[in-house]
Image (cartoon, rainbow, N blue to C red; front, side, top):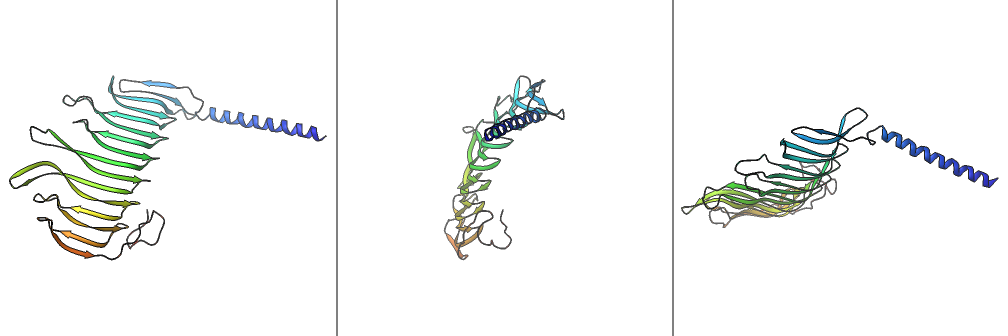
Length: 277
């Protein structure tokens, strides 16, 4: 008798699992997962798609866009209506610059994930390099800036403008920023010179640790303007201030002890006027 009950029980379980699988198949077949790929094609675009239960287009596969066929402006990859994979774009062809790539971005399930690069049209040099993790900046963050130089020998100067690191969408780590300027000193004109503007460190999106700021006046663009410490985006500890003309020490300031910089949602109370992200 016991053997018969066990046999019935096994049969019941097998039938139950079969019904579940069949139900899942039926649901998927009515929600757009069982689909027939169709193709849209014109002089400005070509992509594949399928129709969902509401008879709406859902892009799936390669989506190529044209300025006018066959000159490609952008190539996007889709996965069930979400950008997934490489997104590439090109500037419109120019009689002076030619046909130059504009950007490369990586997506996963509809959000930026991985490296992103952007180039200038005029020189084809890289303009920015960033990294994303599930839609948030995470890792290297670098930007360059170009400026025309009227010297016949150097048609373009191209300098790094910003060098930083992000973590979970917040600045976190070493940070340096430059400016590009033209200035005159002792009768000479210096075109499009890269001058350091500031350097320091971030923790969880807030200035933290030792920082330096630089003068950017025409007469003395390389002297340190001020240096000191930050904690939770607030100045603290000893600060020093310097003359723009000579770089000599002008004054000092004691702003009290530095505290800790906490991650969002953690640690002790923040100073008045500040809130955790």
